[in-house]
Image (cartoon, rainbow, N blue to C red; front, side, top):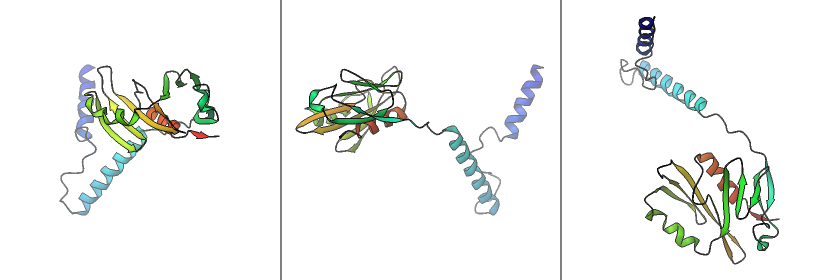
Length: 185
């Protein structure tokens, strides 16, 4: 029985071209219609597998959350957040483990300039004059970081993933969206 399973597995690998279906037929002459057809077939197969590998993220129901509980100076300011989000001190908690931190940030500009000095920070991107994104790679695993500067009156606030970020880029995208949604109601 074991030999039959091994033989069937070998046939499957050989029949599928060694398991790498992303390569075009090498036997077709370059520029021929067979080569073009094989390339199109490989490209469409890859596109189909990419589309099926990433299912669409479920829509998140959003609501407005008053920022006044964080600080009285934020009275009248709201943020668009996932339904059920709670404020705990300076943390805005959504989902089971996800949160962002919203706190005073007088030295924000200098802090983001120093991101490259930390060897655990990679792929630092200045999204705008008020937003930076980067990846942090400590031994426990990759984290996706966001820091958005929010100016309210003369005060500067940091809307950030904090010292640890989420392990999914989609959560970091949501945090960025939330931080950039702050407005006066």
